[in-house]
Length: 116
Image (tube, rainbow, N blue to C red):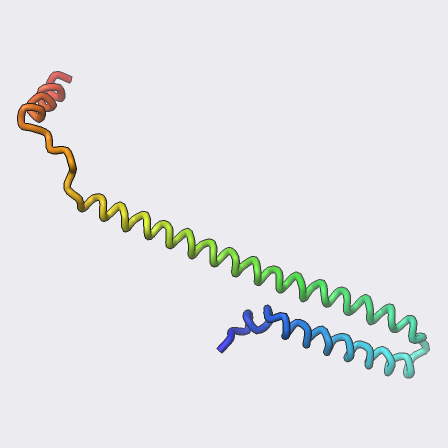
């Protein structure tokens, strides 16, 4: 089942919402012009401004959700990379070293440390 964010980000939902807003606004404009002294052109301008403002707000909200989704995906990718890095570090720490110094070399290292 889709979440509300996925539902609102669906282009089909956006189209349906825009259709409802356009037809609803047009119907209210015609009804309002019959009731008041404003002409149909005045109502058309008012409704056009309202639809544009509401469309801009709705578009900005969708962009904000898209941005949050992108940020969440990037954080998940970085977390996965960090986990992979820790895995390889643990794997490398568990491996025995390839170079085993001889007892003579260890004795020389101990002498160097004591002289310093």
